[in-house]
Image (cartoon, rainbow, N blue to C red; front, side, top):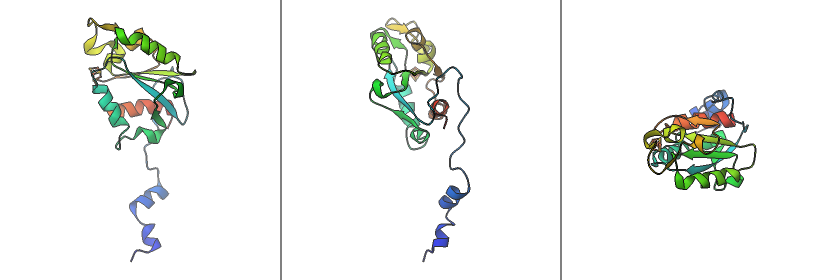
Length: 164
Ligand code: SF4
């Protein structure tokens, strides 16, 4: 028979009562990016990605990293967002939609360039259909390096925005 004192000796209850169950928040990734203490909502824009970055973003919000527990959420509309999470080099066809999507985000807002393609064009730089990296089309506040970035790197960078 399990008694109430047995329940309080379980590892989960001991962890909840005795110490933090998550690691402390990382230091802010960049001093230039606006902060959204406690909660940041992002609209993801694929500006021309190979979809590798999207797979890793999916893992960042999956059960292992679970970015949502740090107040980071992906939302369906830029009008509900604090900023954009942009992947891929910006193709010529996506340059105007990216600008219009950013205009729909209320201020203060943040633009995150996720992956080498978004930061500097990566393997698609100078391709015929490419307008340029994200920074050539809209102002970028935060960069997440990697091709693709690891889910933990994505989570850690976004935690710098929510501060959790
Ligand atoms: S950074 Fe790498 S994984 Fe991400 S879109 Fe570019 S090529 Fe694909």
